[in-house]
Length: 462
Image 1 (cartoon, helix red, strand yellow):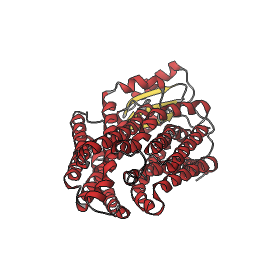
Image 2 (image 1 turned 90 degrees about the horizontal axis):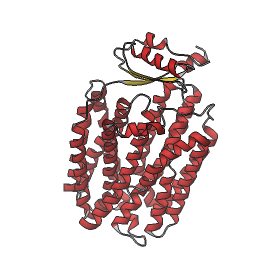
Image 3 (image 1 turned 30 degrees about the vertical axis):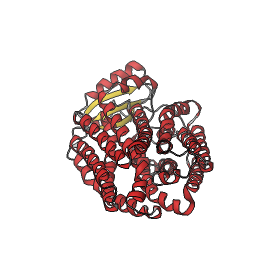
Image 4 (image 1 turned 45 degrees about the horizontal axis):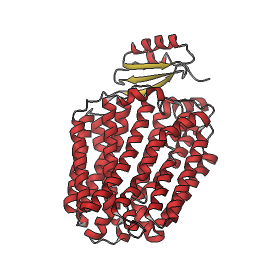
């Protein structure tokens, strides 16, 4: 098999290197953000100006700046290039980490965390990935990045308490700055330069689509879902370290002994339910059931947060549902978004996620200061219950795959005619052909698809 044939059958070496380098950059950044989750509440007590409310703000404030800036960063990368925006964002993130490391007051840490969030490179990373990976392999590349985010979260929950014992929270912030600088080395030395950078509608937001996406009730349900999930996650970690130390009597140096088994045991739990959702077409049932499990987990933490065993069980239940929902929500976005609006839908989805982290940290801190630890877990259970009620009315998603097909240069009239011809192919449910992109954005029922008839419309790269 020739190199060209091999590249057509799977990712080329350049594409695999691109996807891996993007995953490393994203993981290094998220690892730095997440490592303070399980330890910061204990450290904040020793800072000047400490209050529980300000502690929650310090944990969640990165989400506010990230939510507002990630889409503008992505749009800026269309104008000045992907790599300059990513390098700038990582430098801003590193600066915020240094600010937080040197802070001796809670206000200084809040400023540093806000600056960390201002290094909002998510949309630019996705856009660069789309520039470097062909349409037929882009979903695979995005999945690699998604797995790296999940792995960084799991690693951070264990590393945070261990590193806190060795180098303290300021040391973790310094390490976070070094990780950001490591990301810059990766983007400069390991990441290929794109031959052409242009707007990729499957991977980045398009301003002309903002209004339509924000008016779509099914997409808004999913945005509300990821908002709620990360609100609950962040609010819970405002008080979980305190519950382990003060209520359950476990020394801070041993908190990893709680997080590690809960995480490891929960990881395989999602697999059979993902199979049920995708292969047996029970997406809505599994999705709604997972939200109900989040309600249960928070009620367990509310009732038993004074016992180590109760916290372990509550976290195991929570992580099992959290991992499942983190995998399902992007899949649902892809299924429900119009074929040419997936990038815009994912942009608002990501902003909702980060805004949820901000509201979760802020509200968790306020409730802890006024009503105590238990009130935060009860609040999270109520948020999850509200989400459950909201999700029950969600439509059963159609089990459609998304695909991009290169169709070559066309004028707008020819593009419209081609879209109509494509929708006549068995298994093609939606087709949008964008003339300037030279690409057809498709929604497919793969069980009925006539591959040969569809591929007849494709134009191979020279």
